[in-house]
Length: 368
Picture (cartoon, rainbow, N blue to C red):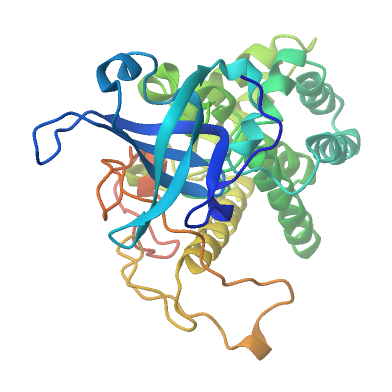
């Protein structure tokens, strides 16, 4: 079944006829009050999620697909207990290679080719010849680039979108330029650009992009910090005469960028560049996360209490908001279990711990 035009969740209204492709976020076969089984689904795309029900040929249809498959569906929208729901009369599993994945996950606002070109310009400006060859080697690696151009920066917390890692990296690169301009006698610009590129590089293997973001096996068992260190070792071996001490310093930037041992960093920052990188990474990721929270929250002034930060967050009055700040809430998604409320339990990584209550730069006084 070919899809001529994607119908997004946010555009569906009561009594609409719907024929389009969705990702199956959740699938269950519960029993109705009269004891008959029915197929309960949560379908999603990049704009939100909607519940769906199938009441005919339930057992046969349930065998056709699983959760996280793509599904062509046809049916009618109606309100049930105050929520919009689809009653489906046709469905068909669609191979993943026949869908445009950008319809199902958030994407960066910039073309990835443009972002990679900007990154290449920055690499070309690196003075140290070994480091320059090292960095440009990544951009000459087709397999790496294929992963890097679509990688998110995180599963849910910040820059959770296709191309999010590139967006986060370039944001940090601009911040790093400004900080080096303020402290030219303290910070090495070459190391700062290398650090902002390398600090999350392991996420190209840690995170998967398949309708929604999740952790790969190596992501769960090894993690992006260790993966990143291994990638540095492998790339350094491809540059003739790459200095051992430079490789060690680059690895330290990656190993320490979460700032504290309890946040998953095997080492705390011990160089000026590592300290600056950790602080800038926290700033950029927190600002993006706070903005997402404010977008999701329907109130005009104060958000709901945020347990992650142990505080409410305030949205500035309109006349003080930066141009382009949009505080409109996103569509609320139904629960993963198909119920009327609640949120699915999220997997938590060590990086998520980094977003626990802020305690400033003062960390544990224990030795590492």
